[in-house]
Length: 563
Image (cartoon, rainbow, N blue to C red):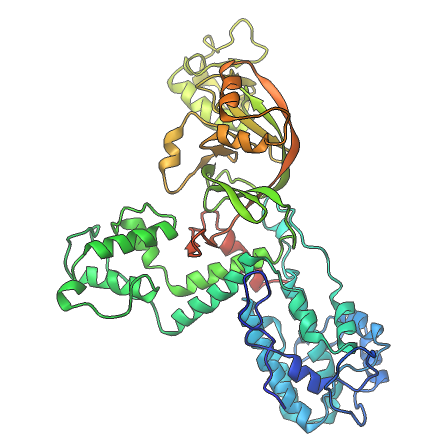
């Protein structure tokens, strides 16, 4: 019997990696004898007789429930599979040689699950091993069902069916096309192409495939032991010397930022220019200020254990399993965790810019929409919650705040700026004034606003607070997405409109100071997502802080998920 693996080879970024686990060989040894289609190539051994009879299978599947040693079978899913096969067994599980094939099958399933960042707890491996060891012919039907159920669960897990992200994340509407896993597996068994079918259920997005390689890399790092930690102390800067500098150097070596060869004893404890440059690279790839100094935030990131990075990779892989398999040829994507905007055209980045997104207590939601219009010189109609939480406290300190910032109270012509109101007597819950900020340089939306349909009154816009874009962590808004260069972004979204919408023409329209709404001729697809692990344009893996705790929520849900 050939060594089983799951047909995974190292592959080009646009194809599914197929290394190093192929269950096909083990499954071919297990496949029950059945008439295969004329075009199918079968290497399955001839079976003399199938112990797991059609009647025994159907009898179990027609029960209202079936539990074995605490394991509850999904009878509806199994019934769909076997009904498609007229309740014929799919596997030879009684022969001694095939019992050995079962063991290699379990090994390959475990390796395949590991490769895709799936928890092995979902699969009844321990129960199957016990039944194999028993050698009891009465367990043949149970083994038959357990092998099938393992593959069905694996297929559903690869499709992202374990958790419902719409219940976990605000605004999540992304969804892959549904796949009939049970019917597809039944067909694949008949055609002797089980491995290809299971592999086809995984995402094929290059970002997902990159994460499978990253997961392998970081698990290899973790297998070598915990990363060196850096003792607490003052900020480390170039020119410092001592054991903490040696710890910093060892830590960067452990994650591959520095070569493994040992420096001289004097170099080891000295914060050199090379160490400073390397640390700045680490900071860039971890969303920190790249100053080459090991301050509190940088030390906290460096002291993150490898298992935490592995968990982040697993969480991001799971989110990718829920994303559509295809993307538009041209679209805009905002990565909340990185606070970055990227416009993609034909698979390549056409525009890349920093943005400001929602702070943790006013999160920017996930969004799948289309940018449909541009508003020049917009007014800002202040949401009630923002007026209550943000503006009222400022009014209590400065009763002229509305007038200074260009706000008026709608419907209050006699006192448009609330000069006669004692704001200290107004409770937040009783603040029902409708505020509008006039267009201008002080307007919180800046000079350009970009509208798209969503359920959260969120939009993209400029801002008078350009200083925020200089910060490495840009989580300051109330949920909307602030743009650093809205004029350049307007040029991109208006590319298909009549006339040549150059930055100069856009700025000229802004300078007119009149409010103008302009429909975008070809709406630009937009997706607002959350990636804390991703590959940058140079092919380097980046990590970002789980600012919204979305990784943690997802990992907890996976532990208690459906399968």
